[in-house]
Length: 577
Image 1 (cartoon, rainbow, N blue to C red):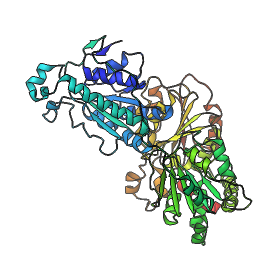
Image 2 (image 1 turned 30 degrees about the vertical axis):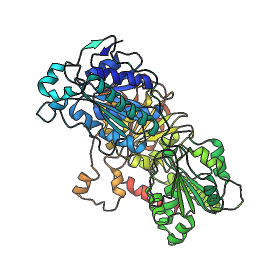
Image 3 (image 1 turned 180 degrees about the vertical axis):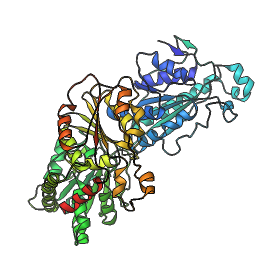
Image 4 (image 1 turned 90 degrees about the horizontal axis):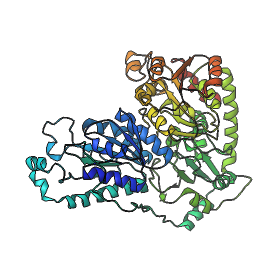
């Protein structure tokens, strides 16, 4: 076991070990050599090398989300750090415990024209939970420090170590208690590669984490409102599988005064809940009795659980037809998504919902909407029988083909939105980067999440998202049971259903981004098995063998008709109305 000679590098490595932070994603560089040596030469840590820093950060994010524990990314100085920003923003809004560790130049070498040097402190602005800017050790390269900035020697090495330890502890406490990303920035002076078997730094005991959000609410007040409200709605956003207990789900399902809306990313499955929100709301938008129907759907009480919501239609509805009470239940963030948040109940959802009064009734708010749900489900099946090969048809076929217990990762934009329209096998665990809803990093996130997942992983992605993050496949240990289904509709097809779409060169170039790329050569470069389809029967045939065990990962590229997909999707909502 070896350590860097530099005290602050020793302190960080030993602090991570004391906290039990094992997984370290390292992007090669020179300035971060003291950290790379400390982590890679200590068998306690599991290190991964990923060259592209943007991919590395999303890889770590996927792993942290899947493990539900902090994972660190380590980079050299300069612009390398800025490539972490998209993943940091995603971690911030999705509440994922990502630790960013950046090596830095000494303060006297910043903004003097030195290479690979930028202002690294406060690099992530308001998108970080805590920023620890450590001080430069003065016991290392003392003569160099004296030459360039003697004022730094006014603080003793002991004082610097006390300060640095306090900052590291603060960062590690917050990343665990708040599930927010943190940034630890460490300046190093050369030489960078010296090693020692015995560290001079001692870190004793565990770095403990305290609950910074203790539960504090008046259950009686909430119970009174809940029990006297005839129309209640529970809206569940992004969350891990198995967050809500079966007893809670049964209570909600048996209460006919409660309407439960779920999304694919909520990982909640119950036939008595409403899993396709847009299929309920879109027909109302088209109805001549729009206002009357929306008033009938307006809840007295809205409870939101989990993270961010995919459906734009439910957001628009609840922003106009506001409930009297909106309670968000959860220990961390509460977003005022509908501009009517009245309470943030800082407790575990199971605890709160179990303690609310529930009863079974033969009549109620939900029963009227059960008829609407049954209608659109029947109409959806009829519509699938009549349409040709398209995104809509393909997504239904793909989601129905995924074997039990797979981990499913969805790219953003049209992929995650199509997925909401069709049933998802209840044994699957479904994830998507909905914090910022960006198309960047979907592949890298899925690869990182697959590393420790006990079952295989499939990524369902659109073409722009896939090609944008193709470096996510630049990883030597890609699992052979990793699968990618790439829907290639020749561009950003979702823009064709938005207002203002036109058949002009400007639209196709700057909005839709029409292209003729395919993934065949990428698959060859990264050593993946490749197949493509462009019709119904070929897709059915390929899916039959796609998930069979193999020695290499696989990509199935599904070519769909660019100019027909938008019409087929929009006609669906007319058909079920």
